[in-house]
View (spheres, rainbow, N blue to C red):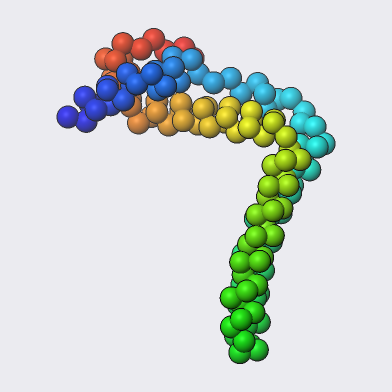
Length: 130
């Protein structure tokens, strides 16, 4: 039963294209621009500021017995973190999408090869390139 499901999945157009034409990771060998690195740093920093700040606001609110600090401060800190994330995406530019797209296609192709297995891929009539 599961073999038939895997064969049908392997015949879907996008999956078929991923399996027959593996994604090339050559783009990751190129040296990224300083602007791209600054954008990625801002994206990473946005993740680092939100939750520790929200936790600190919770501790301060409990210590001062003033829940309004947490109720107002948490959404504001999350909003600031989101703005920093968007700024990072803007600064990193279109290369972010190219890198992300390449990596996601490569990882999805590897995942599908493992999940589908050689039998389902062969029975679906796909020709594999390595």
